[in-house]
Amino acid sequence: MSEIVDAIPYARFLGVVVERPAGALECLLPFREEIIGNPNLPAIHGGVLGAFLELTALLHLLDEGGTDRVPKPITFSVDYLRSAGPANTRARAEIFKLGRRIANVRVVAWQDDPSKPVAAGNGKFLL
Amino acid sequence: MSTERKYALASIFGPGRSEMISYTPHARHLGLRVVETGPAFAVMALPYREELIGDPVRKVVFGGAITTLIDHASGLAVACALEELTAVATIDLRVDYLRAARPGVELFARSECYRVTRNVAFVRVFAYETSTEDSFASALGAFMIGANRSDSSFERFVGGKRGGAA
Image (cartoon, rainbow over all chains, first blue to last red; front, side, top):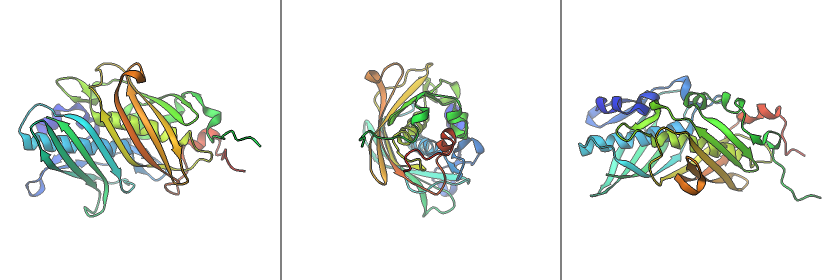
């Protein structure tokens, strides 16, 4: 899986790390100055959170599907639930429906407490 | 009495200036630039960089980088629709990827804030290489107005003056 992350330049750009606590794929977005969107709070850029969710959904699909072909996103929707402060962010995805052509994936991101998500996403990918 | 709307950022409407993103670390990191702002709209650009590729085979920019371009242009469009500057935060953003973005060229997003209510602003966005008529992505977003106690990062450009204040 880490080879896939290495193969996706944007994943390296964000500094995303793939971990596997208890077997399930989990992505880590380490906090860095470069991902701040609002320096007054400070808070991570909403676009970065959206991108991180989308990346986690994609990596999860690649992991489960065992394919090297990168699924194409059709639509991706993000709910911003809390402001994400200057801390590490983690995300986990779940495939809701794996069809012949389309996969429906849900993904949640949190910081310190998994029961207090900072953002949630829903994506449809063309396989 | 004029019914013409006032805009807090009216004094900076026109071609984008580099200072407009200089206070946002991630916008700098990504290389975003403001192309143009005007009443309730903003156009932003994302220069092509190999580091932003999401699909190594097709060399297409990762969807998430496009999400950031769209999100940022939308936040700016909302600020450009307000009578009085206040902090804005994304509540919800949905991006439809209509086709693959062309590799190797600068990508643009034009966001229009088509409705502002007391608490929420609504935007629609087209992302394209040359024309909104031929966009590769479209998006809808909802933003919270007065989202937190921080100042709008755009206050610096209008000297902290609250344009809509009576």
